[in-house]
Image (cartoon, rainbow, N blue to C red):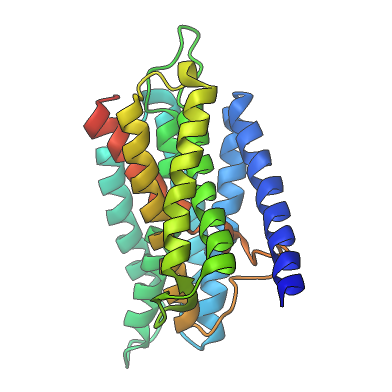
Length: 294
């Protein structure tokens, strides 16, 4: 059993480090177009995995329409944020939400509506768009939230690195502490393997990651103080656990063990970003409304 756990941990760690290193590298070098295409690719793959899980259980969903909506939204939002900054998007977000509903309802007009299937298709599709591309786009918003340099270069990339590092420290801490010390179930009706020991490990690891990065590059995180780092470590640690459990609800409802099998030890792209879908919005709101970056 320990050998199997060790193998799973090594695979999980390798996949996580490899993929997030690629993402962090694209952010750190300041290539916002490279960052955009990477975010776009991951969001679309994760959304497709979600649609596939839903369809595998015989539920109706508008896969192509949903994918096109996500691609247009992420592209439009990136270009808008790149030009106007991360605090300039409230009207854009309202327009996007209204647009999602118009498009999905419009798509249904080409199908019969004799039972509850049309409502299910609309609900599953709109939920997928809000759950994955809409939430994941907060990562892009953080990039452009702080004022750019005199030459127009974005300055928020290190806040994204902070977000990703703390989130992944939380994920790995939950897995390691849960595997080694887990005895007391945390949410057995959702995920039997989640334990309170793993939850405590997630918080400890998130705090450790936040303190470590703040100590390493304090000048790259000028808006953060020690108290902010502590609060964010705890808040992101908790929300990362919630994000993981949220995807577990979806997988349990669709009888899926993983969203796909493309990443050894992890599963699919949605399994990789599930916690970020919940931590990114909280990081954005904390930076904007608590610290006052705009």
